[in-house]
Image (cartoon, rainbow, N blue to C red; front, top):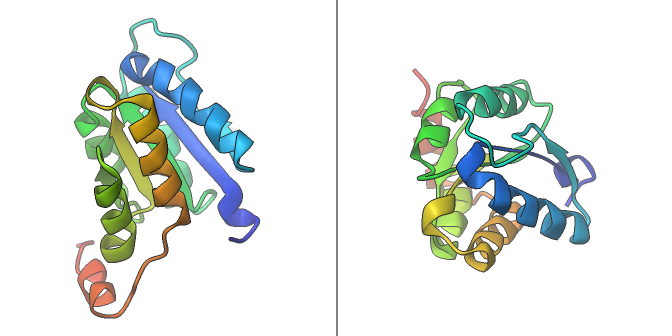
Length: 147
């Protein structure tokens, strides 16, 4: 893993705050440098306010990968996927995180804080950050995503 790929962006809304704090600690313990785009508390916020800056930073290639979190993971992934160089995948089990990387070259993992345990979320993130894109027939498919 390159030094550049050890830099990870993270952002969440109020529903994901506790999980974000847990994941930041786990990622830092694993040697990643985490840039936190907020939110900074469990007080109610609008998820696009935190997710746009994360997705924009991946879109502009300031980060290779990122983690985004909201209650269901859906709103966060919808916002992130508005950016042409972003492929955000909603994952709630490790197998989905692996396939998101292997087959879809996802560069953002979106987690549903209200539907996933901390430990399962960490396993998803750990797998997401350590799994390579397989390329091959999947490359052709990924190239057809933007329009």
